[in-house]
Length: 308
Image (cartoon, rainbow, N blue to C red; front, top):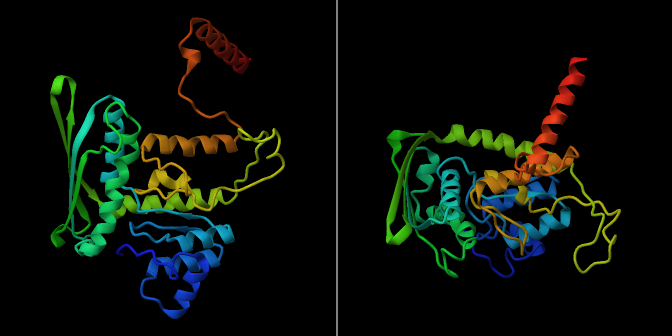
């Protein structure tokens, strides 16, 4: 779909949106109607396409009914690689200055994206993936500075579902040098997307059964003010961002696109559900001599117990 205009009296509040759906208002998109129907049925809605399904009225309705919504746009191939590559470059102190991505495919997705209005939705979801990683390093990038980032998608019917993706990353390195990385990827588009749907549904359903409570107050609150109050995740379920190109997050919270950071969030929530401490990757037990010796002794003791 094309992006919907956010209009006062149309889709800016839950009540206005419901009234406009009843009147058949043209600026209310089909996907927003599906999202509203899902929310009213108490069923989680995941937006696997790039358009702005979650207009303010949909978000307000989801919060009112305490139903999860998540989006946007399945992250299956080129964008997933981009989130890894840019994270690596910026973390290594290598400054990406130009990112050019080209795709061609011949399925219905490719045909739909041959329309300029629909392509604009996809261009936004693919382009924003580098923003938070660039903003994380204010030594490489000054405020509001971004790499040149161009996304091209072409419809080629003959190749059908076999999508071709090509990327060129040009970066500045030591003493004014330049570094260029070129990647080519051929993939079966639908076969990459379907497993994501399974994973998203499974994880979303699990999140419906998770509640938590704080045992101490946040900074500025009295200790214990959050005790005994169990709550679910925010209706905008940002934990699913690992599998989505343009993470939709609660208002006022940061957008995280770095793939491994997104994955760690999922893993650590699942570890918490099992009563395990979060992974922090410091592995101090393998870095100090006394702790290494202690770890070895404990391992020998466990083996001895098992053998008895």
